[in-house]
Image 1 (spheres, rainbow, N blue to C red):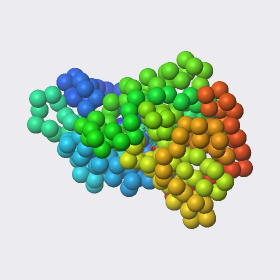
Image 2 (cartoon, rainbow, N blue to C red; image 1 turned 60 degrees about the horizontal axis):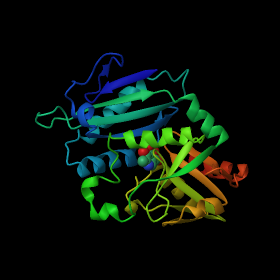
Image 3 (tube, rainbow, N blue to C red; image 1 turned 60 degrees about the vertical axis):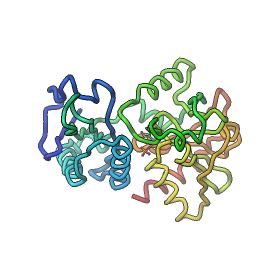
Image 4 (cartoon, rainbow, N blue to C red; image 1 turned 45 degrees about the vertical axis):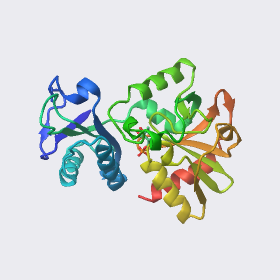
Length: 282
Ligand code: PLP
């Protein structure tokens, strides 16, 4: 199931070609995107997602359609989604730099998609992860802004290759580690760790994506009396945690039960508590 809308708020046929072959998203992955969960017609964290889309476009120095146009396209997709049969969708906002040699007019669309059975299984059963080297130091973002760390660009081939590596090692997911052994993020998720009643996540200054889900979870947890810390921690801490999750819009808070082949505590009550906090906060 796909529902495709253009930024003037009209629907388009999701099975018909939309982009030119010389579009820079096709030629070079040169563009930005967001993936938003819509549940029961309500887009979650839409403001933070649009803020992040704008930030990514600024980092890439590319033109982005105005916010009202994105909001209009989001509305069109939501209004045309078959809510009777599907109570959730993953809504992608995609924007490329336009065609090669063009005047920079962006190509953009919003597309609603069904959430796959694998994601549902991982949400329900939790996941095993492997830690993989991301190959950069946590201070690289500051030293080399042209590497576009922390921008959500359309170039996700490396992230997808890491997921295949995890699969080939018999694991469900990946946690990337910096060259100094500190934890970064997953290929499409942020890491959230619990120690007692304190939640930890990696700082965005390390070049990771600032997560809207992690942000919402921390907001809700703070209101409920948890302590939260945004600071670096080593990969060994993953094994010492009282609870570990991967957080992202579509996977929500997915509990991690195994790290590099070692079982870690995966308390169902703790998972239920944090998931409920997140659900209550949007
Ligand atoms: N980190 C990366 C690299 C991602 O691609 C994503 C989302 O896809 C996230 C983190 C989680 O972000 P969010 O919670 O806003 O979906």
